[in-house]
Length: 565
Image (cartoon, rainbow, N blue to C red; front, side, top):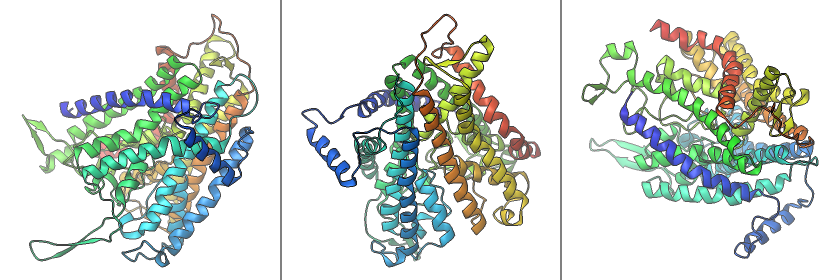
């Protein structure tokens, strides 16, 4: 294992915690009851906020129960799905299209629309060669903001359901959405975009540039309003890049500084939301325990992936293409990796498909790590909002198991966990893994599905499994080798929509059940959820649920491929 790679991960982790903790406290204040902008210095922000509610005619004086909140989320999302689909179809006739991009085909438009409104950002297309500037900005970048804000709003509603001691409401969706957009995502996106422009990421409305090489050839270089989209795609754990190769393209990620900032932006808000949760439920020690469980799973993935890629495979070593870093140290498997950044970079822990290398060329063991990370529901920090309320499902199951072991009704933060809560948690945690396996089976056993699989054997199976794992879990990264057909576009759209909204509704239903429960006093038999025992139990529950579900599939893909090598 490279000492340089380990030091990068350590520095990254320290900086992440140092920034996430104060951001989490700030976010808790933003979502607190009462007006965040009520102070003397921010009164003008409050006036703008109230004006927005009047324009959309939102009744913010009344809070919603979980059913009303979920209904509003769905009703809010449907028009954006239709609008993004329409923009793509007619982009050839609209402005801000200096390179004369044609309208996007129907099946690709639907898949992309479903992708971006669900915070998945799966790309069956090359952005620089398919989408006009208007589509990139008014369509894709807008949804990078909106879909992220929806996930953040839902998380806050779920946290209120856990924190409140009486009543049956979870807050108001419109207030949570506005504050997520204006007070959190927008300021952070401006800061990151300015840093990226400083590092050389393009931000222009000019068309593609034409360059003449020293040999007299002509080269077309894609450019456009890149920095603004990259900033929110990373912060919102979106991942839909301006360019097809995402952060492996120097125009999206030109320097070591930009690479570090982009990697930091991916986990910043999800990590901060753990501390926000601790402050809102008045249980900071419990939040640290949840953070520790996430970090343990993160560390386990790094401990498998980094040595596997650093060591390479027998095939890579026998080919003689290994790069030597010096002092006799092998550079390992550098295939499809950026020489500028090295091996110690991954984005599969969060619901973000932005990558700076190719997963398809990883070693079997290294490629299995992002595959498993996605299958766990991306609870290792995860997507903005969705990662933490996804972790809540596992927490509920963990305290239920603990209750069975001690022979008493399980409790979580003083609220009893009973049959209804377990059903909602099981639905939220297990629906998507089950769906991913079913859709993969359909894809590899039907003629229409096999048309998308370009590689034979175990590797082709892994690519197929990853495609539906990524779309179903709203990640968006690709293993490559899995092509676009009408069948795969429509099946993928179904996976993304169900993968987004079934866990979302299950999370709100769980909050709706918990918000009505009274808090039970702590006794000698209460299972503590703020210590090392809880962390071990939580990690074990994650491994024994989704982890065991994917193991048979791993034996057909990465494990078989590794044994063949």
